[in-house]
Image 1 (cartoon, rainbow, N blue to C red):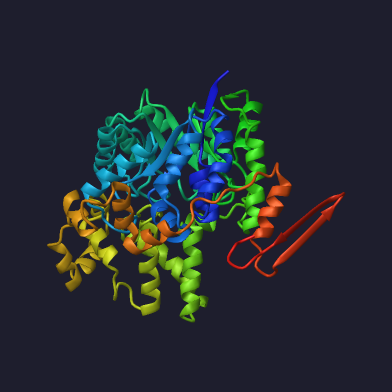
Image 2: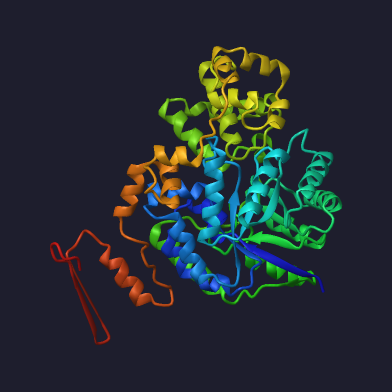
Length: 490
């Protein structure tokens, strides 16, 4: 019987896809030990985007989050998603990236899933070599897309380039949920053929409803691992449900190396948190062919809708989505994943609003055409469009510009001097000193109560109420009074 391993994405991609990275450290700690006992190959808990979200909005220390999780997750490898940049929309100096990798390892991360939005092997190489220098094992992502250039031959070439880096695993990553079972079958064969001896991992989303079927197709073709999440942080725009994939794998005669029993209370606790916090619950979605046409991520469509509404142009959303298809073709079919999807979508919106294509161009699109975001991506830009982009005065300024590469000492001198810790330095680099100080002034991670303790959960909820000063509960001989006193809490 063939064995199948699972990677858990609940605390990273699941909550990023469905809860917009609003999952707090305390929520993660509540379920961490049970996730650890389920037998996952790895548990993905961090991405560089978490730094800004944690510090600026949640007022939590992202490095302390990893350290606290590492104390509870002792048997399973902690994995992070990484690239050549900390911020997806800014080019990061090498010295800062070196420190970021070092601090991830120091906090408890042991494996890095390396990705580049253009599948640029030169950028993969930098990330893999950086990870090895600090002691992280590596997974190289081959990011999937649909376009005339993303053929079997393209992925065969990319698979060979990935294999040449000798990573611990290769991963076919489908961030847009665009894979079909048929396309999964052809690509799994292609990638396995050109990465002999390297274990294969499938990371697929459920945006078009086909994610679970694609996972099963990969399993049937010998994929060693599949990435899944625990409901309610599965399905919809997230990854397939671990319960569904494991159950169907068994029905097909495979042996999931996973114990689902400890995951049942995880799902129960997460559902309770979703209900209490007003977070969405993932559910299977209907097939939507339009996703294959414009390939704009759902969150980005929401942003476009909001921006157009503010301009009184909401009725032109369909025009913007149609223009997105044309701009993507002009730029050589970049994969519609952050940050390239934002580059394409923003330029498409400007083209529609201004009424003339490329009459105004964003700095990011100019940098893209110049190769600052990867030489391979720039080489694919339509020559006529590239001439139009690079003939602009702004492009001439960028042509002689090179992303700055300050030393770590220079970065540290700019952000506070030698007394600033490495973790503090990285957070200041991403969000600034004021936000870090505001985070430090906030209380530590809040403790969340398990669904197995309903009375404590009720009391915790009641203490957060602001519209009354006294609450009295009486039931079956039990009497509890909560009274809020000025200056002393409850």
